[in-house]
Image (cartoon, rainbow, N blue to C red; front, side, top):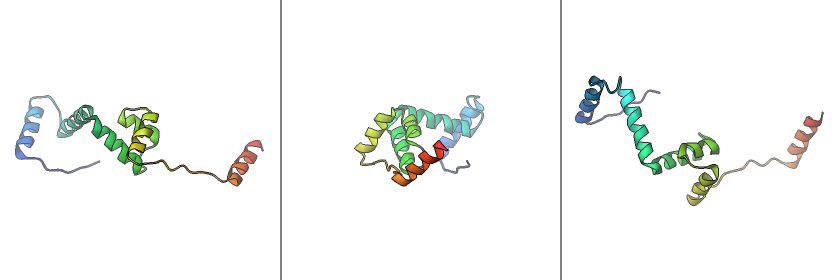
Length: 105
């Protein structure tokens, strides 16, 4: 994924300096490490991102809980506390009967 963003000149210089000093081999490595540290130190951001990813249907409930570093039960509680309820797809009795018949054939 290619992303573009702008930084203050001093930050650009600092990034270049840590690359030249051998701490990182690329700007991408610097950004990945910075974001990893950001999410490690600000748990509310991990939770917020997991909730948004789940709300948008980009990840499953289990994956969202994993991203948020909580159990599935805890994640369900987080969703409920934010007024977000899971939509369960309910099959009709006819659909269930058909599946049972196909399994017994």
